[in-house]
Each structure stands twice: as structure tokens, then as C-alpha cells.
Length: 278
Length: 173
Image (tube, rainbow over all chains, first blue to last red):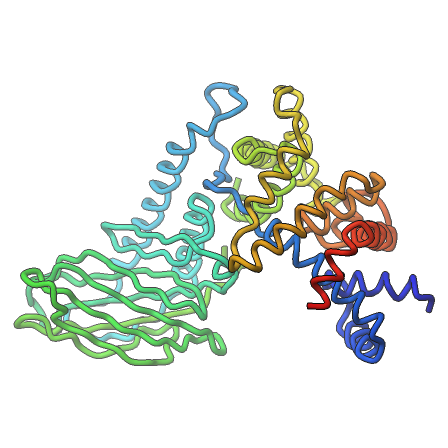
């Protein structure tokens, strides 16, 4: 092999374009050849110099949807807001369908029925998450109940982490107790902790703070979690629940939160989102 | 249109944006170009026969939209020089010392790009700036992968020769 051919391979190595065998072989050669090693360092430095450029993203969301265009204006940035609203509304409609589909299941208050998450629900959650990403760009997390949708933009490399869906359900432990059961759909990123504040109408409570740090293992999810309920009359946290559990598609009890004079059951199901499910 | 096809296209948006930005040299215009390209892609998706990859197809649509944008607004034809200043100011995500060094290197490389043979400059831009793989760049240019690898290498060699003193100084540090 000529020096020129070897240098060309170095160039491909710096760009990650060589197979693992060729990469290993060339690296071993370079380690024993100071001139080759110097060239590799220069190639890598040149590659690194353009890395920030390759990470450039649009500063505002690009709508990937086919809406009829009323006027054939070339520049239609001003329409982004209405596109975003339309897409979010679409997301809400899908979610409404999602909750409606869940209404028929046997979940009497106070029960700890282990209800498996269906393939249809998994697909719906994946679709809604993808829909919001198409509107808002890469997301660090997304959370929704039947009143609110919250999203947080991803920063840096976290957008590349695999999304994990978490179905969190809080319901009064006593049948007929005050307050209704609440279900939250949360999608966050693997190896990226998410702290999410959600408003709530639990009696005596002002809000709910959920901390999740999930990791997919064999189709299930190893999850560190903390759930805190903030009291309405004080700034302090009134109830907390934390721990680490491996959960899957069947709703699992995380325990109970003692809030004012009632107990809330906390149940959770989780699954890694496959890209093909979108 | 299905959400799946929208999602397919959405995954290519960052790269389409970089292609557009490189061509039109203005972030807002590049954003509009990508938006236009996405709408066109979705409208034409039924006619996409899969003879080329989706990446290549979207690249061509983006190039066409960017060319239209350049034609429609001659004052935006300032191109390279304006983009260079913008790009250098944008490369500031690391610590101050590293950012300053990367800015300097990137600025040097960007200036030196103008002096490269056209085919080398395009191969370098596709793979090092836009983020296409060698295979994708080969498909876009209609050349064998080996030709792309050779052009990218020649571009790097010429750039390194021009940037030589700066590169050596830093590598030795």
C-alpha cells in the first residue's frame, strides 16, 4: 500500500467511514508510526473543527405537515404559529382518543388492577410524541394529562437518547374518596433525568413534581423515580414517594402517597419507544 | 400523508437546514427554504419512486428551493463571505479557550475552501459540513464511493497544507 493510499484510509478513519476491522488495523499501525499518527491527529482536528457546524439546527421549528396554502407567498414564517397551534390541537385530539380508549377499562377507584398497556396505546403515545417533536423540534421530555401538555426542548446530544414512555396513574385508595384518578403520559429520554412539574387538582394539593431517570433493559425499564406533591397552603412538599423499580407494560404499584386525610395509590407502566412504532 | 412519512422527512430536517444555510448564507432564509422543501417533499411524496434514497431526494429538493431563493432575491447572493462570519460566530459552544481555537481553525478552513477544486469542495461540504455519509454523498453526486473518498481526502490535504502552521502548532501542544 502506498503512503497516499494509507493517508486516504486515515481520512476515512477520521470520518468514521471504515469498518471495525480496518479501523483497528489502521490504528495499530498508526501507533507504531509517529508520522502516520501525526497525520491522523491533524485529520481528527480538522474533523473536530467542523463538528459544531454539523450540529447546527433550525432555530425555530420546521413544520412537516401538508396544510393547504392559502397564498403562494414564498416566505411564510408568520404562519408557523398557526401551524404549531394546529399540530398541538391535533395532538390533543389524539390524546383525547387515547383517554377515551382507556375509559372502558376496569379501573375502579381503589383497585390495584394490573392492566397491561396495549400495542395500540404504545403506538398512540409514540405518534403523539413524534407529532410534538415535528412541531417543537427535539424534545427532552413531553408530559400530558387530559388538561395539560408540557414539553421541554432537548439540548445537545440528549435528543439522540432513546425515548421511554411512562404511564403514571394516581388514584384515591378508598373507593368514593375525594378527587378523581389522574393519569399522566410522560415521554422522557433514556440516561437523561427529567424533573417535570404538573398542575394537579388533588384535594389540598397545588401541584405535582415528578422526577424520572429511566433506562431500558430487555424491553423493560429500570427507573429511578421521585414523586412529590406540593401543598396548596404552604411552599413545602407535603408527600413524597421515591425509589428504583424495574417496570414493564403491566401497571405496577409504586406504593402510596399520604396526602391530607387520604391515601393515593401510585401505579406506573413504562416501555421504551421503538422508532418503528412512530 | 401519514404521520410516518412526516416523521421520515422530519428526521432529515437538520441536515436539510445545513445544506440550505451553506447555500443561502442566512439563517432565516435557510429556515424558510427548509420549510418550503418540506412542504414540497410532502406534496410529491406519492411520486417518490425510491430510485434514490430519501436523503438524496430531500437533498435535491432542498438544493432546488435554495436556488429559487437565491434567484428570487439577488441581494442575498453575498454567499460565502457573509456565511463565514456567521459560522465563525456560531461555533462557540465549548469552553472559551477551546471555542476560540475551534473558531480560528474553522475560520481558516472556511476561507481555504474557496481555493479548492470545485469537485473537492463539494465532496468536503457534503461530508464534513452537511453531515452526509460517503455513500450518501456518492449517490447525491452520482459518483462511486471511492471517488468521493478520494475527493474528500484531497480536499483535506489541501486544507491542511494551507492551515499547516496552525495545525502543527496545536497538535504538538
